[in-house]
Image 1 (cartoon, rainbow, N blue to C red):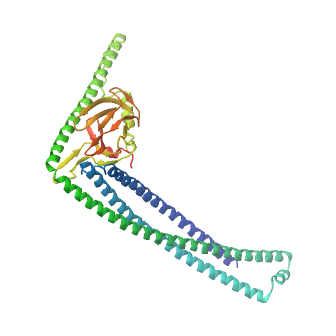
Image 2: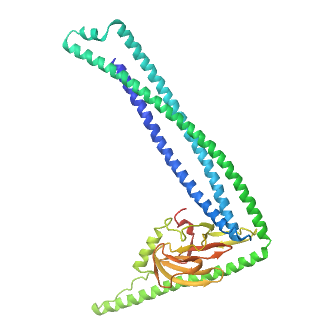
Length: 426
């Protein structure tokens, strides 16, 4: 009988460990589910921004490059959303397999518990047919024997109660797993239906894009002129920024050399020994610290506008309308709402404020050895030499290509960096 008691105890521990393992695995799944849901939420926000941008230009019947850039971004986000839905269905299939596996395991455990309980009842019926519990106790040969028999009967009763409790728990878990399974099946049906709707909408967007590109391509001559004018404006902006950066480095070098000369003269007067000059640096300690903290903020910088989406990305790419025509962007274009405020992404000092035809007003802010550029501003609310803090308003967004849009750049001294990797993900 002691062996049987040990078996029941072992079964109970095994069942509980099975439940715990299932819950731990479910927690791992929840992390993946949470990550996927977060990606879907962020992508839906991007889709909402592009829809809002197109809605803002709805009254303007004329097709513009800005509209085409917006619908191209919307198509990209729509394709991403469908891809996320497919991942969602794959994850649901995996979750369903997990639930089915756990359910089968619970059914096997329940069958084992029922068979063991039946064996206990059968054994009890055989004993009770021969002798009742009171007779069993009073037929003891001694007091110690009586105590031992009483403990045996108590343990036997406790084992029966424990066995029933375990079976009830398994039955409850089986019902829960079945409900989860039915819920996952419903989720999959809903996603399949939503995916079909999204795919149809994507096809509509692509047809609309084809129509818009076809209409705007009729103005090829004007578009090519616009591209050439933009190239000249960008070249002028690049030269302007490079000159400011070089000027700042030269000024800091001069200041540092003068300071070192003064220190050398003072040292010579006090100690009659030659003083070796220190190697000059481009930045003082404060600016170096600012540059290091800016570098540590990669992928955490706030966006220069509160709402908006990237309408043109960094680097060389094909023109959205003209086939075979390549265009370059030293930063990123961000479409935003009309009259949107533009803000500094980090604390720094304004080093240049200028106006460039085709790029509107431009602000250059220094952050140690890093510089941020805000182009195509309609208004500017600061001046050269002014200190600014992170998220401080510097102006308002202007219009470009038939849409409210700014150009944002990040430079590391004279090197162009891709700003998309520096901004907090949206």
